[in-house]
Amino acid sequence: MSALARSVVVTRAESADGPLSRELRSLGLDVILWPAVSVAAGDRAELDAALARLADFEWLVFASRHAVAAVLERVRERPARLRVAAVGKATAQVLRQRGWPVDLVPDEASAASLVDAFAGELRSARAAPRVLFPASSRALPTIAAGLRQLGAEVCQVTAYETQPGRLDLASCRALIGRAAISAVTFASPSAVHELAGALGREDFARLLTGARAVAIGRTTAAELAALGHESVLASSATLHGLAVTTARLVRTPAGSS
Image 1: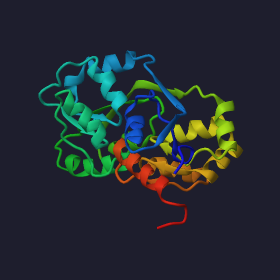
Image 2: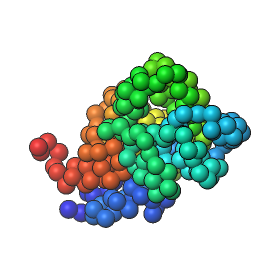
Image 3: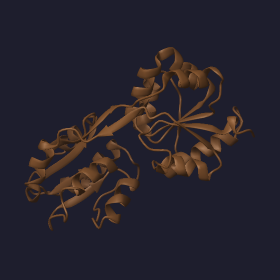
């Protein structure tokens, strides 16, 4: 198989030595970086104000490693009675590496699964638990709305800004025109939305006609489906699962089982 036939696009915000890129290269694939999204600190006054009263909350919920980084920059130790939930194993791993025990991690790394996992926890609560949810500026309402429906008092604050990435669109379109890409990895709905917006509907469709879309989880796959594109779900909702699934697809001819 030629190097050209093994070329895989990484759309998440990471450097050439980022975790997904390293995984893909270790599996013998060539990586093309198209950072469709970027992450910036933004105005964190709201986050700082919430963390100043962290001891008032019963739960702290993380949906991404970026939120973990923003909080742990400001909080050295978690309050003794505070419980911590993480949407996925990758986010939970980052917390544990920093010495923060994680009390709740759903089997599937999705916002809906986290809400489902909370159902049993909150059903037995004597009073409405107070939940702090530091999130992306573009966080979907699934977690906050779902927890409120379960009876929790949710304080959602912006921990970081998700913004469009800077793409060399001429280079992107040249590669699409040469059919030089065999797979495109998507690690968030934002990456789908921003890449489709940057390329335009026609070129995005051309890209995914010639290359296989691989989604890290169901929410990301749903974003692709909303634009009319099928995708393959990663074997696990982690960057490792995304890389392994992508490598398997690239090595399997289209139409093969």
